[in-house]
Length: 203
Image (cartoon, rainbow, N blue to C red):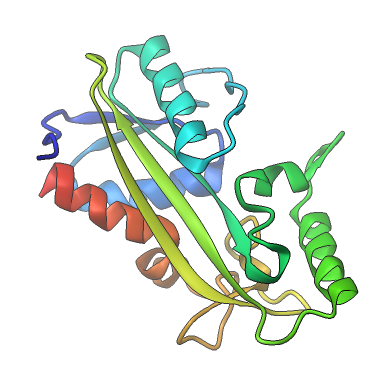
C-alpha cells in the first residue's frame, strides 16, 4: 500500500528548468505548490549510482535533508537498443563539456556510434524515468515510466530538451521536439511515471 501525499507543497529536486516546467504542468490539477531546487539554492548532489533509482534517491534524500520538505526527484535517460542500452543512466554525462551540457554533441555522438555499427533501422530506443518521492520521516515511494520509440536523423524540432529532437515516439510522426509541449507531456516517460505516482500517492 503506497502512502498518500497530504501536503500542499512539494520540492522538485531538479535544476533543469525544462523538467521543472513539465512537473509544474503535471501537478497543476492537484493544487500542489511546486518549488524547484534552484529556487531554494540547493547544490546539485553527485550522482554516483549506476541505476536510475539509485541516482533519484540521492537527489530526493539530499533535497529533504536540506529543506525539510517532501521532495520528488527523477532520474531519466535514453536507452538505445543497438548500443546495448547506452547511454542509459549516463545520458547527461554524454552531453557534459567544460562549457556545460551540449545535447547536440551527445546526439551526434549517438548517431555516429549507430552509423559506425551499421545498426539496422528502425533504431529502437526508449526514454526511461524513475521517480522517488521522499518524506522527511524517511519514507520513500518509487515509480518507473518509459516511452518507446525510434531514433531519427537528422534532428527535428526545437522544443523540449535533451534527446527530444532525435526521438520519435511509437505511433507518432513527430519527434518529442516537434510536438506541442502539452502533447509530449501527455505521452512522455515522465508522464508514465507521473500517472503511476498520482495513482499511488495522490489518487
